[in-house]
Length: 372
Image (cartoon, rainbow, N blue to C red; front, side, top):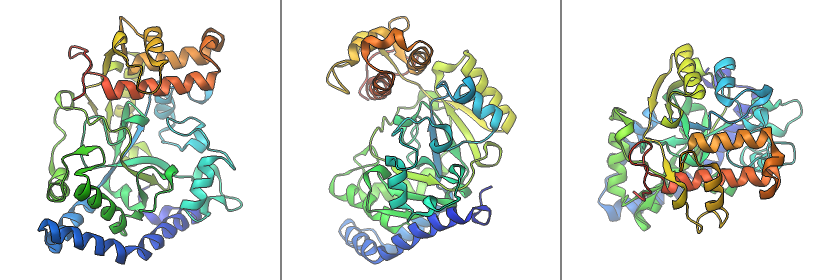
């Protein structure tokens, strides 16, 4: 299910719209790249070889929280196990970002701009809509965009050929867009940030020469043991990927990287069953844990410390503790009424996950606050 010829008319039109947009900006993008490479002593052939290798191996990660409630009183993990497909928010009606996937909603409007109205045509079903992920080539164990989930599927490289990309989140309506075949506009934005800021896609001290080496080398690196590697903690700065067409776990997912707080739990067992059923490799990353008394009041709002104390398990907050709070909120909203409406508390719990990613230490590794 990874080839363009299996896509619907609307999906092909969406891909073509973005490709043509990127092609119209190619000349400007290449001039920007040439200027940066001239000042960075990087030959154009070196860049082309690195870019070609990267495009051949580029993988997209789809982040998700496995313990969130889905339709039919199932968890997300159970739905994935039973259905074998990763659906868009327009189908699931759940999200770790903007919950506006309905006709006239914010997501619908920005998709209309981004894809030239391809998905707004009469008769196009919600199931045709793209799935959102992030391009993964820094290979941080917590994934390229952990704000959207504690676990992630890493898709096979061939799926990337039916993806569109934006430099940063599409809800910001970024100018830099492309497909894998028309990627210069996105790469120009990436190298510009590396040149001017020495920072890009959550990575500090990333200069153009170092970025070239990343493009050349990172796809050859084995994953190895993810549990003893430092997290990237990249909450805000990623290359968003929009996957057009179906995402079959059996055909399109290469591996699953999961949070260790789910080990030994019902959710963890479901994830293991899922990987066994669909022949997906399972890895566990280092996870995050934070003492409830170390939750800051100056990151995501002054209500975070009191929320942390409320949901902590054994004095600590981790991915599973936040998920358990979401489930309890859905089951008994009146018990949470002191903190606001269901939507308001869900937003707080979403922010608590951001706090955990930003400040949490490795799960099971002392569980102390860390900024590393």
